[in-house]
Length: 197
Image (cartoon, rainbow, N blue to C red; front, side, top):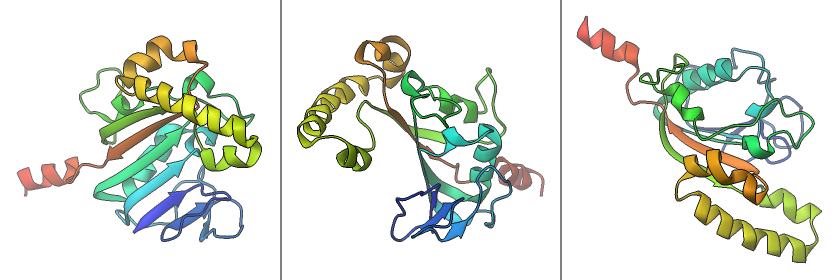
């Protein structure tokens, strides 16, 4: 099963679409700041969270809840504002950096969050959410920004950590950072149970 958290006006066909407001295409009405979510442990193989987590008051409890409802080996695709432009929206509480996945690595001495995700990819986007931009920008400006963004993205994603920390502000910041993370196939509790039957 596939889950789309905080779908807003953009539900995805074939997904369980969740939003706090009852609108067209929303399958489950739930405020994502309220935990637990109305789903079973390991219910979803794929979870998408597109520009939602930056609106929520607490990040790590939400990530623990996503971990709970994601099946072992399941994938989380999370898109959020990069910190260089993270506060462009009046309801954004934070922006994110390329180091965010470190908090889900048990080897991270700076503050493991308690749940493990394996980061498969980090991608920066200078010109994000084209489906939204198409409706608010004049066509020539949209096409120019899309082309410029493609070049900047290509350079930034050679080494996202370096860009995120060193030169992101030279290009006016990045609108979006995408994290593709996988829940390990076996949880630490499963491994511990196998060692001590």
